[in-house]
Length: 400
Image (cartoon, rainbow, N blue to C red; front, side, top):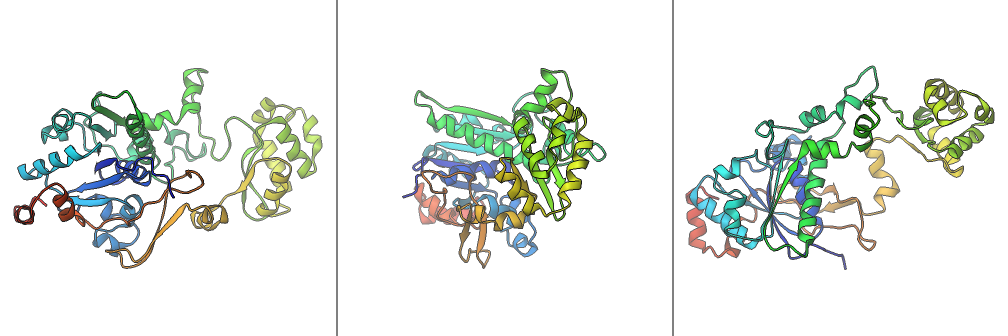
């Protein structure tokens, strides 16, 4: 039986697009009952985003499907007094609320942390924003690309001739979501907690926290990091190399690994070459060493060299496309990708990635597919004690 560490925990997901939904995606896979509270008109913007236009028009966009399996959806107009009351009732039943509005929005709705503590004194309230709940930039909007640029991440991505470069997926949003999920789980695990907890997640700070080596080179060593393309800043030969067929990543970060590279490539004289004999020399003469290595690698394919280098104890691996990575037995065989059959609102099966870990040998899963907008409104309202007549009145009042 699958382990569900958060079974019995209720999470209210008031978030949109990626950072917040991704955080709650992790919590759902840990067994939490995640209720997605969405706007009546359109719901989560991610419902309209993705590569399949027909799904976008049906408010089941691919971007939404990727982050929302296992959740239930209720629509609420939080500007209406009856909508506010419905959320307050939900909060009384919940353990966690996650939102990613701009700072101050929930307070203006009279649904901020202090307001909701009156309904649930043990509420864990997680606010995700671009810059945090205070500071000179707190009120500015922030999307992933804005954070990538302002964190310094883009300045060290790419090669010297084309940097700064954006990372090819919303990495800052994703890091913000992972950070929020970790903070929420930590608060839930606090055995000494007697009251509520307010979690303030800054996407900017979360992104910079993952840049430890690059940041510390500046803070401690006084050296500002520079873009190096596909080369590893700390070692050589460590980076991406052309072969006779395909690209190969090699990470010969230790002296013995460099010696093994020389042996595999048949050039042990490089070990006594003054340019390459030690780590600092190899870093200084990186380009010359790379050219020599690629001359030899041109004789065989990436797949052939990959095996030879790994057999010699040198970390190496091919450069795959996303489809190639997904189709590899290492991914396909470990339960990383989940399938939902004939998903309502989609009309066909969908495949989505799960979490990046296993518990007691099993990949965490969720039982239900991503929900249609407002799919569970009536059932959740009934759980909260609303009668059928009251629910119909909320529909007529355009609250749900």
